[in-house]
Length: 223
Image (cartoon, rainbow, N blue to C red; front, side, top):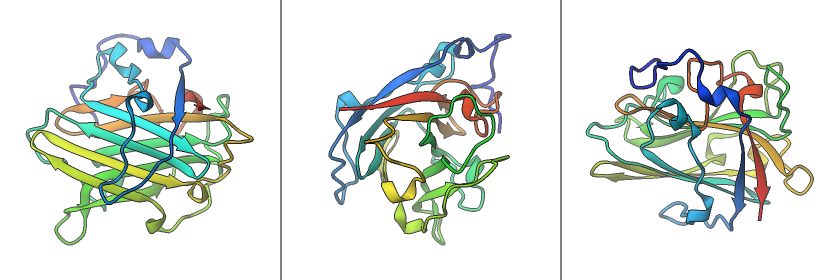
């Protein structure tokens, strides 16, 4: 899916010139009936803005020995999110790629590479329920171990100009997740929105970021 708001107007995306490394802060990841709240220190940048891609979402990610969690707030919307549980790749929401072994030189995903999707709606008979899913990565050499849908926690709150979305990925839902032994992850995310465009950690969809781990950033799990 291409959007005129995300189409590059340069010959080379400036984020292609850098190898990004970001800290992911440790947090208790206390899940409540309101989802997950993360402090300001857990906010992560969207370097895609260097290439004039939109920046409309506040993205925060935290980690603990028991897993990874995030909180997302999207603002500036006038339309409802476009979400379909039958068309996950194209749906609005938070798409997160993780390599628990941080292998920046590989071009095809291994069993340690994961793609998670959290979308604020699209499930249920009326498509009003939030959906969390582990999606297979195209051209992967091998896939991570399968997980039951209920393994992923998700919570969404509608706002007058957007929505808030939080999710929790437990350690057993990530093949190879062992922060005490492996404190670096390969990481990439994209906030997809048909109305507002793609907000990305770095490169945009004109590059094969959805399947090539060498194009992902590196995340350092820190206290």
